[in-house]
Image (tube, helix red, strand yellow):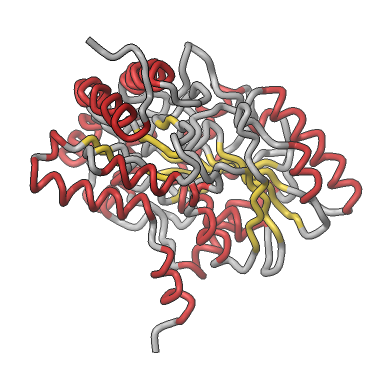
Length: 402
């Protein structure tokens, strides 16, 4: 008999995937170039030439057993050291290889982090709007995910509601900055305030409370700014990273867990992750991907197109009359729908071959997400369609694109 828990999950299929599948099917009918698919956050720029050249050179020159064999369960030691050294250079940290655990992307990193610091019945708090897959990620561990309502004024943390939800069962706080879906980067002030609250609560409750920082968009930040590195502000912190966005390698499934060297049990944390792997069937990412990213550890793909696309959409959406907060990073923008029911709004948009994602599943009803990791020319062609949609369906008046 099939497990009823997973049968029940079929009823909650990802709306993002459903819309992406619809866009693909619609593209077969009218040509995908005529479908303005803002559904899926799939990087739209190629990986760096250096990464490709590195992989080719490895396959031509290295011992096949080294690049195709099993890696150590915690990751290849030289790769873990390269990650630690990169983080130390960039953020003034003092990681060693022993603080790094190589994982299958940020999702694999989170799967280990959640299990390392909670047991069934414990609580993890996160903040709306948030990635919908956090719910199955957490709930299948036996822990419980609680979501703080959004601060829609600027999408920084809603501290008033957060402090109401804190209780002795909370063992971790999950944050995502730059944020999917809002595109907001948490300010240094926000992170310091969060750290101060948790330091006080650790003393009050008599146990550790970890910050688990989900950081796949850390390198995609706009206006020449940098994303504050969360572990610089709080000792009991865990960074979960993926190279999927920074190097445009989502198919390689390569990332890592980095535990703050000052965290409780930091020196055995990666070893604990190795034990967790035994229970969830995670056998570490491919040796090829590990060795290759170590060679280009401080590089990124050309991420500038995302800022170009963001500016085009932000200017157009505000001119049309949408309410939204300007993103500080990622490749998402998060406007308020033109009616209370964002699902109905997005259904109407489909008539114009605009594929937009309602934000109910992100914990923020009445909003919608646009993933603008698409060709810039397609973004430009979508703007007159957005204008026609807003004008014909909602009667908005504005200065139209010439």
